[in-house]
Length: 316
Ligand SMILES: NC(=O)c1ccc[n+]([C@@H]2O[C@H](COP(=O)([O-])OP(=O)(O)OC[C@H]3O[C@@H](n4cnc5c(N)ncnc54)[C@H](O)[C@@H]3O)[C@@H](O)[C@H]2O)c1
Image (cartoon, rainbow, N blue to C red; front, top):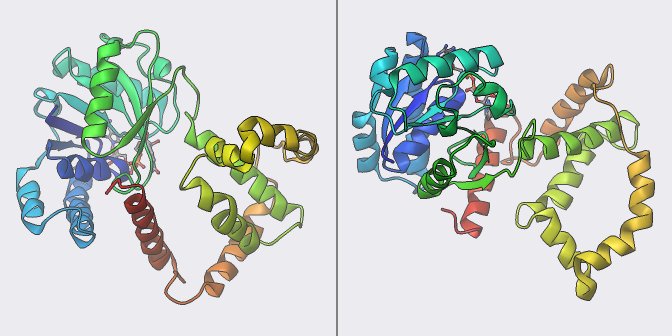
Protein backbone atom coordinates (compact mmCIF):
# COMPACT_ATOMS: atom_id res chain seq x y z
CA UNK A 1 0.00 0.00 0.00
CA UNK A 2 1.41 3.37 -1.06
CA UNK A 3 -1.51 5.82 -1.08
CA UNK A 4 -2.39 6.78 2.45
CA UNK A 5 -4.75 9.41 3.85
CA UNK A 6 -4.54 10.98 7.30
CA UNK A 7 -8.14 11.84 8.12
CA UNK A 8 -8.01 14.49 10.87
CA UNK A 9 -4.61 16.15 11.15
CA UNK A 10 -4.15 17.21 14.77
CA UNK A 11 -1.32 15.88 16.93
CA UNK A 12 -1.73 12.24 15.89
CA UNK A 13 -2.76 12.72 12.25
CA UNK A 14 0.25 14.94 11.53
CA UNK A 15 2.65 12.57 13.28
CA UNK A 16 1.22 9.59 11.36
CA UNK A 17 1.64 11.56 8.12
CA UNK A 18 5.32 12.21 8.87
CA UNK A 19 5.80 8.51 9.66
CA UNK A 20 4.09 7.47 6.41
CA UNK A 21 6.27 9.90 4.44
CA UNK A 22 9.40 8.44 6.06
CA UNK A 23 8.06 5.07 4.90
CA UNK A 24 7.88 6.36 1.29
CA UNK A 25 4.08 6.59 1.08
CA UNK A 26 2.08 9.16 -0.92
CA UNK A 27 0.28 11.08 1.82
CA UNK A 28 -2.94 13.11 1.71
CA UNK A 29 -3.97 15.16 4.75
CA UNK A 30 -7.66 15.87 5.27
CA UNK A 31 -9.12 18.04 8.02
CA UNK A 32 -12.47 19.73 8.47
CA UNK A 33 -10.65 22.84 9.68
CA UNK A 34 -8.40 24.78 7.22
CA UNK A 35 -6.48 26.36 10.11
CA UNK A 36 -5.57 22.87 11.33
CA UNK A 37 -4.24 22.05 7.86
CA UNK A 38 -2.06 25.19 8.01
CA UNK A 39 -0.72 24.06 11.40
CA UNK A 40 -0.08 20.62 9.91
CA UNK A 41 2.24 22.13 7.28
CA UNK A 42 4.40 23.75 9.99
CA UNK A 43 4.33 20.75 12.30
CA UNK A 44 5.11 18.31 9.50
CA UNK A 45 8.18 20.31 8.51
CA UNK A 46 9.35 20.21 12.16
CA UNK A 47 8.93 16.43 12.44
CA UNK A 48 10.76 15.79 9.17
CA UNK A 49 13.58 18.06 10.42
CA UNK A 50 13.68 15.94 13.59
CA UNK A 51 14.13 12.84 11.37
CA UNK A 52 17.00 14.59 9.55
CA UNK A 53 18.67 15.63 12.83
CA UNK A 54 18.72 12.01 14.02
CA UNK A 55 19.82 10.53 10.68
CA UNK A 56 16.45 8.91 9.96
CA UNK A 57 15.87 10.90 6.75
CA UNK A 58 18.10 12.79 4.33
CA UNK A 59 17.59 16.49 3.56
CA UNK A 60 16.80 15.55 -0.07
CA UNK A 61 14.18 13.01 1.01
CA UNK A 62 12.63 15.62 3.30
CA UNK A 63 12.29 18.19 0.51
CA UNK A 64 10.89 15.56 -1.86
CA UNK A 65 8.42 14.36 0.78
CA UNK A 66 7.19 17.88 1.57
CA UNK A 67 6.57 18.55 -2.13
CA UNK A 68 4.68 15.28 -2.59
CA UNK A 69 2.05 15.94 0.09
CA UNK A 70 -1.60 16.76 -0.70
CA UNK A 71 -3.69 18.89 1.67
CA UNK A 72 -7.45 19.01 1.24
CA UNK A 73 -10.73 19.84 2.95
CA UNK A 74 -12.68 17.84 0.34
CA UNK A 75 -13.58 14.34 1.53
CA UNK A 76 -13.84 12.82 -1.95
CA UNK A 77 -10.42 14.11 -3.01
CA UNK A 78 -9.03 12.87 0.31
CA UNK A 79 -10.20 9.28 0.15
CA UNK A 80 -11.14 8.28 -3.43
CA UNK A 81 -7.67 6.89 -4.25
CA UNK A 82 -6.61 5.89 -0.75
CA UNK A 83 -5.51 2.32 -0.05
CA UNK A 84 -5.36 2.96 3.69
CA UNK A 85 -7.11 5.73 5.62
CA UNK A 86 -5.80 6.48 9.08
CA UNK A 87 -8.66 8.17 10.99
CA UNK A 88 -7.46 10.60 13.70
CA UNK A 89 -10.57 12.57 14.68
CA UNK A 90 -11.46 13.45 18.30
CA UNK A 91 -12.18 10.57 20.68
CA UNK A 92 -16.00 10.70 20.55
CA UNK A 93 -17.89 7.60 19.46
CA UNK A 94 -20.69 9.43 17.58
CA UNK A 95 -18.12 11.48 15.68
CA UNK A 96 -16.05 8.40 14.77
CA UNK A 97 -19.23 6.68 13.51
CA UNK A 98 -20.34 9.63 11.38
CA UNK A 99 -16.85 10.14 9.98
CA UNK A 100 -16.71 6.45 9.02
CA UNK A 101 -20.02 6.80 7.21
CA UNK A 102 -18.71 9.78 5.23
CA UNK A 103 -15.42 8.05 4.39
CA UNK A 104 -17.21 4.89 3.22
CA UNK A 105 -19.44 6.94 0.93
CA UNK A 106 -16.39 8.15 -1.02
CA UNK A 107 -13.66 5.50 -0.85
CA UNK A 108 -13.23 2.20 -2.74
CA UNK A 109 -14.82 -0.75 -0.95
CA UNK A 110 -11.49 -2.49 -0.30
CA UNK A 111 -9.75 0.54 1.22
CA UNK A 112 -8.57 -0.27 4.74
CA UNK A 113 -9.90 2.18 7.31
CA UNK A 114 -7.82 2.26 10.51
CA UNK A 115 -8.90 4.28 13.53
CA UNK A 116 -6.24 5.74 15.84
CA UNK A 117 -8.71 5.61 18.75
CA UNK A 118 -7.03 5.39 22.16
CA UNK A 119 -9.39 2.72 23.38
CA UNK A 120 -12.92 2.86 21.94
CA UNK A 121 -14.18 -0.54 20.82
CA UNK A 122 -14.02 -1.40 17.12
CA UNK A 123 -17.51 -2.94 17.36
CA UNK A 124 -18.87 0.46 18.45
CA UNK A 125 -16.94 2.43 15.84
CA UNK A 126 -17.96 0.13 12.94
CA UNK A 127 -21.48 -0.59 14.24
CA UNK A 128 -23.15 1.03 11.18
CA UNK A 129 -20.38 0.40 8.65
CA UNK A 130 -21.33 -0.78 5.16
CA UNK A 131 -18.11 -2.82 4.95
CA UNK A 132 -17.05 -3.52 8.54
CA UNK A 133 -14.70 -6.25 7.30
CA UNK A 134 -12.13 -3.59 6.28
CA UNK A 135 -12.34 -1.42 9.41
CA UNK A 136 -9.78 -1.89 12.19
CA UNK A 137 -8.37 0.05 15.11
CA UNK A 138 -4.66 0.84 14.81
CA UNK A 139 -3.69 2.66 17.98
CA UNK A 140 -0.30 4.39 17.92
CA UNK A 141 1.74 5.66 20.83
CA UNK A 142 2.59 9.34 21.18
CA UNK A 143 4.82 10.67 19.63
CA UNK A 144 3.87 8.45 16.72
CA UNK A 145 7.05 9.33 14.77
CA UNK A 146 9.25 7.99 17.61
CA UNK A 147 7.31 5.18 19.32
CA UNK A 148 7.16 1.92 17.30
CA UNK A 149 4.10 0.24 18.84
CA UNK A 150 0.78 -0.02 16.96
CA UNK A 151 -2.02 -1.93 18.71
CA UNK A 152 -4.30 -3.49 16.12
CA UNK A 153 -7.78 -4.41 17.25
CA UNK A 154 -10.21 -6.43 15.14
CA UNK A 155 -13.47 -8.31 15.70
CA UNK A 156 -15.29 -11.32 14.27
CA UNK A 157 -16.37 -9.27 11.23
CA UNK A 158 -12.82 -8.34 10.23
CA UNK A 159 -11.42 -9.93 7.08
CA UNK A 160 -8.23 -11.87 7.97
CA UNK A 161 -6.57 -10.58 4.80
CA UNK A 162 -7.17 -7.00 5.91
CA UNK A 163 -5.33 -7.73 9.16
CA UNK A 164 -2.49 -9.39 7.27
CA UNK A 165 -2.18 -6.43 4.88
CA UNK A 166 -2.34 -3.89 7.71
CA UNK A 167 0.33 -5.72 9.74
CA UNK A 168 2.61 -5.91 6.69
CA UNK A 169 2.00 -2.22 5.97
CA UNK A 170 2.81 -1.00 9.50
CA UNK A 171 5.87 -3.27 9.67
CA UNK A 172 6.98 -1.97 6.27
CA UNK A 173 7.07 1.62 7.58
CA UNK A 174 9.13 0.59 10.63
CA UNK A 175 6.39 0.01 13.20
CA UNK A 176 5.97 -2.89 15.63
CA UNK A 177 2.32 -3.95 15.34
CA UNK A 178 0.63 -6.30 17.82
CA UNK A 179 -2.78 -7.80 17.01
CA UNK A 180 -5.21 -8.26 19.92
CA UNK A 181 -7.02 -11.62 19.96
CA UNK A 182 -10.20 -10.01 21.27
CA UNK A 183 -11.57 -6.53 21.85
CA UNK A 184 -10.39 -4.79 24.99
CA UNK A 185 -11.33 -1.23 26.09
CA UNK A 186 -8.06 0.71 26.29
CA UNK A 187 -6.30 -2.08 24.32
CA UNK A 188 -3.07 -3.23 26.04
CA UNK A 189 -0.78 -0.32 26.80
CA UNK A 190 -3.25 2.19 28.16
CA UNK A 191 -4.49 -0.48 30.59
CA UNK A 192 -0.95 -1.34 31.74
CA UNK A 193 -0.12 2.35 32.01
CA UNK A 194 -3.23 3.09 34.05
CA UNK A 195 -2.61 0.12 36.38
CA UNK A 196 0.95 1.28 37.05
CA UNK A 197 0.12 4.97 37.44
CA UNK A 198 -2.69 4.20 39.88
CA UNK A 199 -0.22 2.47 42.16
CA UNK A 200 2.42 5.18 41.62
CA UNK A 201 -0.02 7.98 42.50
CA UNK A 202 -1.37 5.98 45.42
CA UNK A 203 2.05 5.45 47.00
CA UNK A 204 2.57 9.24 46.98
CA UNK A 205 -0.98 9.85 48.17
CA UNK A 206 -0.47 7.46 51.12
CA UNK A 207 2.69 9.37 52.05
CA UNK A 208 5.05 6.45 51.31
CA UNK A 209 7.30 8.54 49.05
CA UNK A 210 7.58 11.80 47.10
CA UNK A 211 6.61 12.41 43.48
CA UNK A 212 10.32 12.58 42.64
CA UNK A 213 11.10 9.28 44.33
CA UNK A 214 8.28 7.31 42.69
CA UNK A 215 9.42 8.65 39.30
CA UNK A 216 12.97 7.57 40.14
CA UNK A 217 11.73 4.12 41.15
CA UNK A 218 10.13 3.66 37.74
CA UNK A 219 12.92 5.29 35.69
CA UNK A 220 15.89 3.62 37.42
CA UNK A 221 14.09 0.41 38.40
CA UNK A 222 11.20 -1.33 36.78
CA UNK A 223 10.94 0.88 33.65
CA UNK A 224 14.59 0.49 32.71
CA UNK A 225 14.38 -3.28 32.33
CA UNK A 226 10.91 -3.21 30.75
CA UNK A 227 12.23 -0.91 28.00
CA UNK A 228 14.53 -3.76 26.97
CA UNK A 229 12.44 -6.87 27.77
CA UNK A 230 8.79 -7.16 28.77
CA UNK A 231 7.55 -8.27 32.22
CA UNK A 232 7.35 -11.95 31.25
CA UNK A 233 10.90 -12.24 29.95
CA UNK A 234 12.28 -10.13 32.81
CA UNK A 235 10.55 -12.37 35.34
CA UNK A 236 11.65 -15.50 33.50
CA UNK A 237 15.27 -14.35 33.84
CA UNK A 238 14.62 -13.33 37.46
CA UNK A 239 13.72 -16.94 38.27
CA UNK A 240 17.22 -18.14 37.33
CA UNK A 241 17.31 -21.87 36.59
CA UNK A 242 13.70 -22.20 37.77
CA UNK A 243 12.61 -19.60 35.23
CA UNK A 244 9.17 -17.98 35.13
CA UNK A 245 7.48 -20.79 37.09
CA UNK A 246 10.15 -20.53 39.78
CA UNK A 247 9.95 -16.79 40.37
CA UNK A 248 6.17 -16.91 40.55
CA UNK A 249 6.30 -19.75 43.08
CA UNK A 250 8.89 -17.81 45.07
CA UNK A 251 6.88 -14.56 45.04
CA UNK A 252 3.39 -16.02 45.31
CA UNK A 253 2.84 -15.37 49.04
CA UNK A 254 4.35 -11.87 49.04
CA UNK A 255 2.55 -10.95 45.82
CA UNK A 256 -0.79 -11.86 47.40
CA UNK A 257 -0.08 -9.58 50.39
CA UNK A 258 1.02 -6.71 48.09
CA UNK A 259 -1.92 -7.14 45.74
CA UNK A 260 -4.36 -7.10 48.65
CA UNK A 261 -2.79 -3.87 49.95
CA UNK A 262 -2.74 -2.12 46.58
CA UNK A 263 -4.93 0.76 45.39
CA UNK A 264 -8.39 -0.20 44.15
CA UNK A 265 -9.81 3.26 43.38
CA UNK A 266 -11.17 4.23 39.98
CA UNK A 267 -11.13 8.02 40.49
CA UNK A 268 -7.96 9.97 41.25
CA UNK A 269 -8.04 10.76 45.01
CA UNK A 270 -9.31 14.22 45.88
CA UNK A 271 -6.54 16.79 46.14
CA UNK A 272 -3.97 14.53 44.51
CA UNK A 273 -3.53 16.67 41.37
CA UNK A 274 -2.44 19.67 43.52
CA UNK A 275 0.03 17.50 45.46
CA UNK A 276 1.42 15.98 42.24
CA UNK A 277 1.80 19.38 40.53
CA UNK A 278 3.89 20.68 43.44
CA UNK A 279 5.99 17.50 43.34
CA UNK A 280 6.51 17.77 39.58
CA UNK A 281 7.75 21.38 39.93
CA UNK A 282 10.22 20.29 42.61
CA UNK A 283 11.36 17.24 40.64
CA UNK A 284 11.91 19.28 37.48
CA UNK A 285 13.99 21.87 39.37
CA UNK A 286 16.11 19.12 40.99
CA UNK A 287 17.03 17.37 37.73
CA UNK A 288 20.73 17.56 36.81
CA UNK A 289 21.42 20.30 34.22
CA UNK A 290 21.08 19.03 30.65
CA UNK A 291 18.49 16.40 31.56
CA UNK A 292 15.47 18.72 31.29
CA UNK A 293 14.52 21.51 33.71
CA UNK A 294 11.45 22.65 31.79
CA UNK A 295 8.79 20.98 29.65
CA UNK A 296 10.50 21.70 26.32
CA UNK A 297 13.88 20.35 27.47
CA UNK A 298 12.22 17.32 29.10
CA UNK A 299 10.37 16.47 25.86
CA UNK A 300 13.60 16.58 23.86
CA UNK A 301 15.47 14.56 26.52
CA UNK A 302 12.71 11.92 26.48
CA UNK A 303 12.63 11.58 22.68
CA UNK A 304 16.42 11.39 22.48
CA UNK A 305 16.52 8.67 25.13
CA UNK A 306 13.83 6.65 23.37
CA UNK A 307 15.79 6.87 20.11
CA UNK A 308 18.90 5.51 21.88
CA UNK A 309 16.87 2.55 23.11
CA UNK A 310 15.45 2.01 19.62
CA UNK A 311 19.02 1.93 18.26
CA UNK A 312 19.83 -0.73 20.86
CA UNK A 313 16.82 -2.71 19.63
CA UNK A 314 18.08 -2.14 16.04
CA UNK A 315 14.78 -0.54 15.09
CA UNK A 316 16.43 2.60 13.67
N1 LIG B 1 -2.88 12.54 21.67
C1 LIG B 1 -2.48 11.32 21.99
O1 LIG B 1 -1.59 11.12 22.83
C2 LIG B 1 -3.09 10.13 21.31
C3 LIG B 1 -2.35 8.93 21.26
C4 LIG B 1 -2.89 7.84 20.55
C5 LIG B 1 -4.13 7.95 19.95
N2 LIG B 1 -4.83 9.11 20.05
C6 LIG B 1 -6.14 9.16 19.37
O2 LIG B 1 -5.97 9.80 18.12
C7 LIG B 1 -7.18 10.52 17.79
C8 LIG B 1 -6.84 11.98 17.53
O3 LIG B 1 -6.26 12.54 18.68
P1 LIG B 1 -5.41 13.91 18.62
O4 LIG B 1 -4.70 13.99 19.93
O5 LIG B 1 -4.62 13.99 17.37
O6 LIG B 1 -6.56 15.01 18.59
P2 LIG B 1 -6.48 16.50 18.03
O7 LIG B 1 -7.56 17.25 18.71
O8 LIG B 1 -5.09 17.02 18.11
O9 LIG B 1 -6.85 16.34 16.47
C9 LIG B 1 -8.12 16.02 16.02
C10 LIG B 1 -8.26 16.59 14.61
O10 LIG B 1 -9.49 16.12 14.05
C11 LIG B 1 -10.08 17.22 13.35
N3 LIG B 1 -11.51 16.97 13.22
C12 LIG B 1 -12.50 17.19 14.11
N4 LIG B 1 -13.68 16.80 13.60
C13 LIG B 1 -13.43 16.33 12.35
C14 LIG B 1 -14.23 15.78 11.33
N5 LIG B 1 -15.54 15.65 11.48
N6 LIG B 1 -13.63 15.40 10.18
C15 LIG B 1 -12.29 15.53 10.02
N7 LIG B 1 -11.46 16.06 10.96
C16 LIG B 1 -12.04 16.43 12.10
C17 LIG B 1 -9.73 18.44 14.18
O11 LIG B 1 -9.85 19.63 13.40
C18 LIG B 1 -8.31 18.13 14.58
O12 LIG B 1 -7.37 18.61 13.65
C19 LIG B 1 -8.14 10.30 18.95
O13 LIG B 1 -8.97 9.21 18.67
C20 LIG B 1 -7.19 9.98 20.10
O14 LIG B 1 -7.81 9.21 21.12
C21 LIG B 1 -4.35 10.20 20.69
